[in-house]
Image (tube, rainbow, N blue to C red; front, side):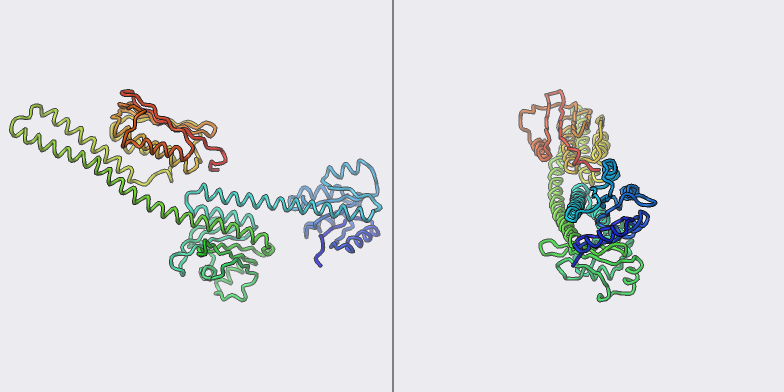
Length: 515
């Protein structure tokens, strides 16, 4: 039968120590004993017990000093210490609690009382350890969920999660291997080796390819542990790798989504660790489900992105026809007509004709620059909101001879991705309107942050419009939809001949900001 707990008794009174040892042994406890404080500290360091029963008055290091040393060491500070003494003095009891003891037992012992106190404090200790374990697990799961939420690129998220897994399990290494379209191929390999750090390239990972391939190709739908590689056909390279890294225990978890195997999660411990227990296996399977869901979401997002690319190409084709093509067509008609009039001597004001041709040509250039900018990949991924808007101003407005100004206040780092995307889109739509419809000569973009509240405004000095009326082609409804999607407040202020100001305000709670 498995012992109830491992208890270390420290007492220089040999008869009393034997009596207490026999009592605890008879009641199902594993008992170790030490006659002095120095021996007790060495025994704890070699193999920490579940509880220490500690006499106060001993030669050399007394019980208070032993307890103080245990509580200073993070590895031993949670071991419950019960003081024992024949001196029933209040000051002894008070000091015992001050140095970290959890209880005080008077000598001579009352059998029922001793057993009851030991069982009570062992239960409290186990519950505390279980609570700490649960809190650590919940924190890790929360960090993993936040990683998938805040990191734009899946490979980067998988690298961070591999490190989280090694820390959580005290493991030697963790790898995520994803299957490619061909079952015999690996699509991606991401990992963390405690001695080397994050590794994201298959060329950098020292885990042998045939071991990975064996594990990926294994059709087992459930998790399994490896405590011995003797029954697995592996190359000498694999066995050398296992020996070199002193790997003792492996946990293999398939990454499945709706019955489709996407890859595997590998966690390995070295000889300094103990084998994976059921709690760890259950936790790892929960993490694997999160990883599988994130991989599937990445696939769905990619399909959505491809569909959006097709829709964007169609939109650009329509705008090219509606704007640039129409301007060029107008140039052709005007130049052809005025050429005939000039040949007949009926063109009254050639200078005005050339001026009008120039105006139409400049408008065509503006439209073309705008379309070219929209065709370029967004810089949001690499540069963030402020730099993305600034690059837009430099690429389009300034080349169209529009004076631009950018005003930034507050901390705009770490904005949630959905908010950053929609703010940029609203700013870009507002700038498009200033360029196409307002005939503006200057535009000012302001982005301000105050205690998590973001306010972005785009203001021009153009011809303005009646904001109470509906206008086609200005994207006002789209801007409102974008604002609603991030729980933002959109306001548009415009007057004829007095310009237009578009403002979007949105709150970003601290917990949603990137660390």
